[in-house]
Image (cartoon, rainbow, N blue to C red; front, side, top):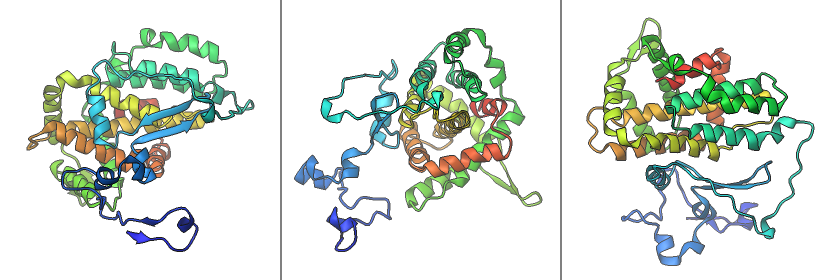
Length: 343
């Protein structure tokens, strides 16, 4: 510990720890916090008392509490919910009440509760495979992003969208689509810069196991299909009884990141593109947890998903950079989202 003696932080905090190694100095050999074991929960720093929990007051008037999937314990909770995530709404004690002032000049922000409820209901509609649900959500949100101003008229169409839109053929993946999907996922992997040695080692091992081949003439990487396709066959076999887990994971992420973002039509569409990109990388890493040579697939699955969450969910700037690249390359279209969802 380094004692804080000067500056504004010293007025609030006693000291700080060097966390550059990515390992807390209080972590014991049994992987338990020695500070909590000896002194109790009240002695923990704020980040340890709060993480992996999140709290935020929303324009809907709710104080939302959520969990980040960057914690193995949260993933275990999602793993053990075959019936899906339930949402509970309880009255707040008066001591936690805050005044909410809606922006009446921007009606879109007032639609947030209705639109979000529709999105989450659709994400949990098991009549359709998860990629189709996310694409259907995009069809609905695109109307709002394109300027629909009558929320009641939009809702009438949105509630029947799953029965009226045929999207399964749009997500079929040929060799060209698979190449684009893998290229996007590898680009995301390569764009994750981290000083955490453990996370860096995970990323490097994934890159090695993908058997990437430098194309010196074009200055690009050639990505063989076989390592991913073989892993996907094993993934579909090993985790055939746990299909609900990816649904739970993406619902958790959607809720935790307060999606969809509805300050204006452009931001709304950007948040959807971001969500599709997150789904692509999480699905990619889930598949790669079953690559050749992995003994404990569930342990590797959790390890890779924690890697993704710590690298992206807790790094909004990196999410924005990856998302904005789609717009720069004119790839922020529903057609390209279909490729991200079809991998």
